[in-house]
Length: 143
Image (tube, rainbow, N blue to C red):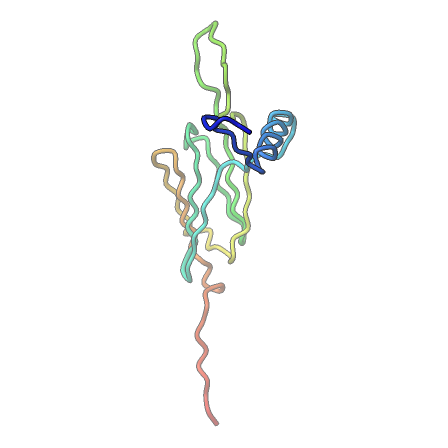
């Protein structure tokens, strides 16, 4: 029998969590799949799509945005942090370097009316729907 002061309990998923942590450590930085960069949110209605992209530390002058039909491409570069000589990074989790991300939108975009803004590390792109891609109400005639 265990003493009453022992606080021992068996959690069935503890071993799975430990195994997952060990596997994550094993494959970290060894080509394991990573989250796509930049992270995007895409919203839409009958008139337009709105895309927001998280791009902290990226100079908006270094961004390229292209629209072709229903494809949106965002590309750019996130530069290395400026550090003093002799400083060693003990943990480097923020990626750097060139990136490109292309997504398919649910409709064709009027490329001449696309607009973009950048504020506090968030890129916001407004993509108006092409007139021919807007839903149309069809009248039914009798007779």
